Length: 235
Image 1 (cartoon, one colour):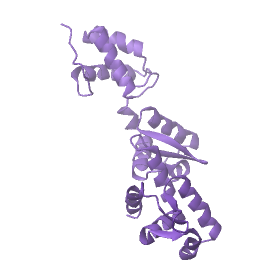
Image 2: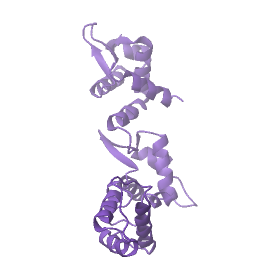
Image 3: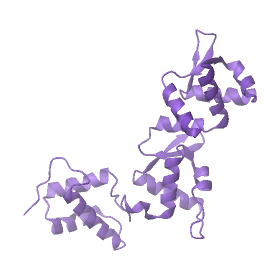
């Protein structure tokens, strides 16, 4: 007897789980995922209505549980100790860029090291299965969890910089201050501070108070989240 699917399906639906099991069986035979093959085997074995089965397969593709042409599922892609290390590092160090990931999250495992090209491949696999995404910022490629907003990822990346962090913390303490006074209080080179102030202004972390002698402050719209980021980075 054909199984009638509910209008709304999710991963916990028995029919969805059955289709995943068929996909895993195909992959276990060292085959890449081919949705036409998956459809034919699942149709024969599970006796699902055509429309319902197609909906399940499309749902699994949309959610990146399955990826056409891959040898993995969303669950099995983390079975690699390298990818697992990389993913956990990115979650723990939001806004990390490629060089940091290679240096700190790609150590020797069982006496083996992998190349930059292999790290790129592992990162692309995590991107393909919607675990992470990459955000371009100037010359950097920043990697963040898929659920994190791009702008928030850039905020975190910027505030990891020591001088940027000092500027933001100073503005928390003093609320507003003349641009020309900041480098003196931080005991940093003026050009280094001015460059970063411009950067922070361009990315909505600080703003100018024109009616108050052009003093600068943390952007009021983003102040709460900036304070939270700084508190987290200082833990």
